Length: 344
Image: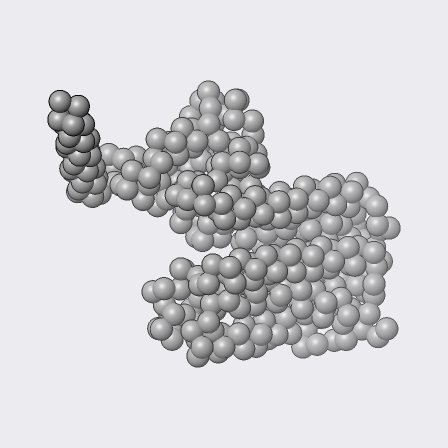
């Protein structure tokens, strides 16, 4: 099959244009119909289409290209399918409550999703690009390839299984109001995030092999290594933008102020690694300095009731709980007095 040269020889422009068009299509549906169900589906399937198109355009179907492209297709298809299933069950996405009716705010979210998709796809996009495929490649099966496949499998299992575990936990009425601490969540508070990070770094590890082993040189060499921006960008998003920062301290603050399983959550966070899976028996007694450095539990994630809680809300909740307790005691006392009168 002939190589397709589309706009540039790294497929950067064509993948960007496809992503913009694809996301704007779904944005127009979501905004005009106030419809949340296709937002994450549009993100995940966009990855699939970019991998398919760049692989087809490349004209060279080396085993390494096929493996990396299939990895992204598999990850994107699973993620979009799961998120579509979940949103159909839940009905709406609370993330958009403050922007669903605001054109530019809502468009801003979709614009950021375009950047996420295009950037994270870079390792596979550049691997399939003409400026890289014109070079010979080492046979698939190098040490880097094997390590990458193993790490991808670990990451894929972590992310997919933990998504199911959390969904099933939250679907059980007996767990209403509780936080998920079962399965992989006993070893890390965010196994799905760690799995996703592992997926994209392992894909990059395989994709960059032609340059790592000296087969690809010049600008193509630089481009392949520059594609590490994709997994790094994803990691920064999950750790500092849309993932941990939105869940850790805000989640703990909400539970503390409402008194909703706060003591249990406090014990859980002390014994469970925030991101990197680790045995809780070893993590709990670990010195704080190691948790803050090696295990990435930075101060921005830590909730301190004295510094971060709204004490007014806490006092209101405690006063309400006190009133409820007195009313219950009064009712029990009244029932006891009525029973004693009946016996006399």
